[in-house]
Image (cartoon, rainbow, N blue to C red; front, side, top):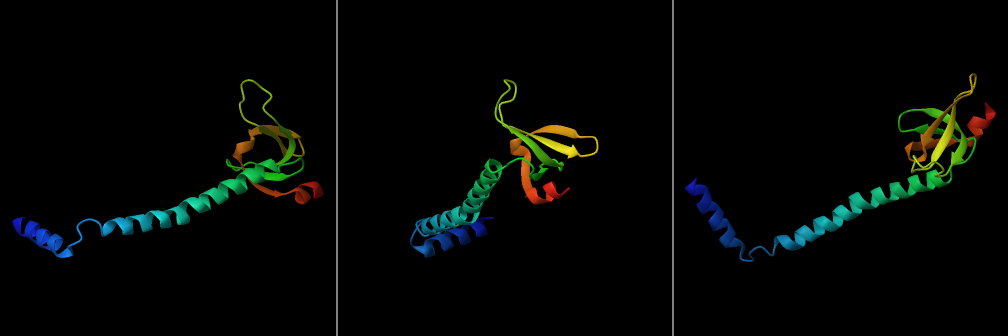
Length: 118
């Protein structure tokens, strides 16, 4: 144990700069982390917001729970118990089954032409 401590003490004395040699390297790592981690996340959030604001009737969508349906109605915050925008989806054409889902649960819009052709 003492021999390891002596080796570390000798290694630190040989640097000469103290702890200032690691500070620029730490700053470089933080800047690179910002560009490689935070910037793509912001871009993805912006794309999701654009997807949800461009949502319209007859768009075929997929929710985060795996539900596939066609948008029948896009509703704003109307109810007092629901604090988010909601979307009414038609999930079955034969029985005209409809479901209300939160707008934030929609992860992908397939296309409006595919839904209109059916």
